[in-house]
Amino acid sequence: MRRFCSLIICAAMAVNIVGCTAHKTEPTDKELFVIGFSQVGSESDWRIANTQSMIDTFTEENGYELRVVNARQNQDNQFAAVRNFILEGVDFIVIAPTVEEGWDSVLAEVQAAGIPVIIMDRSVSVEDQSLYLSNVGSDFLNQGVMAVSWLDRQDADNGDGMVEILHLQGTYGATAQILRTQALEEAVEEHENWEFAAQLCGDYTEAKAYEVVSEYLQTNTDIDVLYSENDNMTFGAMRAMDEAGITYGEGGQVTIITFDATREALTYCMNGQIALCVECNPLIGPILEGLISTYRQGYDIQRQVFVPEFTYTSEDLTTSFIESRSY
Ligand code: GYE
Image (cartoon, rainbow, N blue to C red):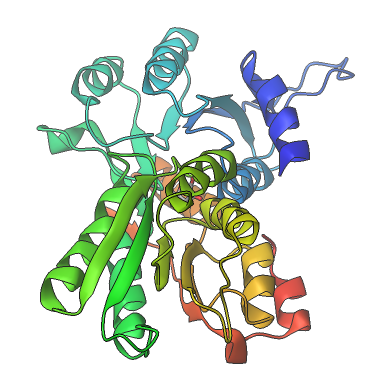
């Protein structure tokens, strides 16, 4: 992920215009449909796969020029990118918003410029629903419900009757954080023997998760479950638990639940170190292209589109299945 990360950050120094190549000499006579894509960042393996899905879909061969701008998880960078897209006169704007709040005015500027918008991955919370055409992404609440329903069927209390949950949250205010958290908090309310050991913010990154979990484990080790809102934070927490001598997985102290289901997490799951992987499908490019193509033909498009996703435990997984996945 670090290798990809440096590649994406280099591109973030300027608008990374995908679909044009430096060596191109002859002007093309076909009109390319220009899409401005404001991406959250490159904070996770999921995000890298999501960006790659867009790049693989909106190619020059398919009639598109894709302009990807990496906001490095900063909403103000997204606002600047979107306003630049307006100035550049792009044909369409796709936004993967860092957080839900704060989008009303910049989306009103886009609407005033007559540029259609689709919100991808996470959602925005705006007064005027006409500011965007559609939201394409995951049903994050259902992801959380699948996770807590699975946990409800486990004996995760390590024999003392109480289930102590260490909750690693993603970026506060991101839809994935809000709804994965909501599912867990409601389940803790419903289960008298479930309680939070702690709720820590890892900002969806491995480094931040390692930092906050390492600090927490210096004074607290009574944990039965880790509910981690993405795989990269899980990897950071695993490293911190290793260093603190806390065991996890089959026969260990801590039952790990993680979200995204990247190949690395699925491998840990197949090997018994992670108990449950909740899939979050980043391969949204083709679905988006279908919606944009439908819109360009003059048809209305669905207001909310959920991508298909499942949960995995060790008995669902084989090396060939994991290797067959594209992220
Ligand atoms: O779970 C995480 C990424 O919004 C679904 O953001 C996405 C989340 C995903 O950083 O890895």
